[in-house]
Length: 335
Image (tube, helix red, strand yellow):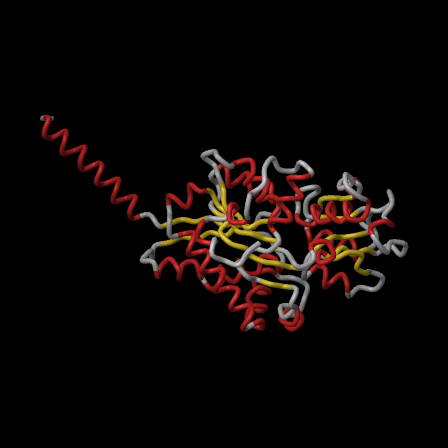
């Protein structure tokens, strides 16, 4: 083959590869878990809200995949391994990853808040009225020991109750257990689980059961309702696909608006996908609770980062909440 022929062949191969790459759809893999804390993600998925936002930006060939991942640690590992593009998880797991990856090629930022719910610690033990009353006979189910939102809230409450340096006082009583299993364990009364620190709808279902009552609420600890779930991704994803971050932020705003304006429809969408043991009417009523918010503006993230830095759970903290988020969110009224 002549030199000219070789050059022509190479050019054809390069153009062919570029054309094949251009023909591939924009593939985004998103992780979420069950529960009302993730309701906006269910609505985004059902209503194809990311696809709509991307289409408005001129990107019509998309493949959005949703995965159910229970553990925040598993989400973080998948994100860093490149097996996941966007994680929707608790604030503490996100803060851990943000602090550890800052300044590295795997740096992460949050895109938006997904939900702010009231967490409730409930017990079936008749002798427990405050967290001071828990004993070695009690076991408190949490989403993840020392790492989940409620586990950190329990540590905050321990400091408020027992004093500085006592954040780990109740850690030995906590047990990592998925929400549905914790619900079953507490209601049955036949396991070691005597308490469950959780969010709606599980807290709602448990509070209705005879003999179960609330011991602590996150509002008591934070002075308000804080963000529970955030959507976050690597800076690399944002640089490679700049339309994705604003598309998800906008899609979450659309989902929050639908939930607020039409809770009956939102309840039907969620129950068709999540199969929770609650009626559509009950869920629609629950969605009107003022302590349940699906605003994209973060709330109380600074309180978590300050506390986790103070007790050594993370090696650094942000100077302001915007340091945790991509620039698209910086204009929100967050904290």
